[in-house]
Length: 365
Image (cartoon, rainbow, N blue to C red; front, top):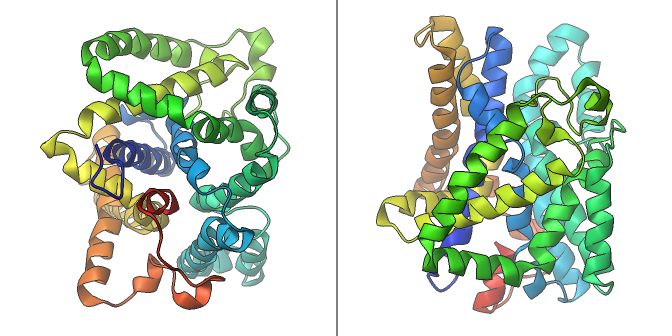
């Protein structure tokens, strides 16, 4: 289903992904501050194997339409675009966090942290930082056989890479999903069409996948295999389960990504889900700005004790973190002020935009 410029199920999948991304930060942040876990922690853990893999897979789907553009336009759309938003929202986040950091370690601490953020992505913004690197790398390897790049990327994901560098570690563990979205986009779209044609078969598969995913997530890995776990067992939602073992994590990441694609394909045609389509089409708005309503809601709930159940409080924080940026975006559109927060201004472009064919316009979003 397409409205002429966008593919509805793709936006629906983006909407599901951005909710899951906001959820993990909202839930784990509240639990860390409260010193206890709630029922939402299990939801976060269940979604962990496929939450970011699907986000990256969806991000690569339309790259094939624009990858052969002239370098200047490609760099403008796929690198400068994200660099602008990264620097802008990095600065905004530090404007809020710097006073607290300065109180703990002096003003040198936030200044050093800000400078470091240009080589070691800061907080929730790492996705915006690494995506242009994926676009650039894929452009450079596009002439190589797809199977060769896929095998290499899969091996990188399978290896337990923990260097301490966010860029290197996340590149190793996430690029394979982005490349699958790019190189096998036709198969992903075909899968979505088959799901819509035979929803009963997909739902039957879903009934098998869900308990299997849960079993692998919540079954502890044998002690002998713990050193091979892919995930950091700190405050990340990782369970130390079988799902985090090499090869298993790759399989669950790909399978879960297809599940999200299938669910999105079924939901996108329903009028009641139009809000989710809109949310996915504006996912970058939520991704950039959710940190502030999330933090404010968390502090209010913890200070007031208004919702004593941590699970329910986590759900409220997640909802506020998703809704807050939408309200801000609405105010920006209504007043006409602050458009630079979500729309790249002309001075931040290295090529003046011109007419773009419909199919390419989808990929540029």
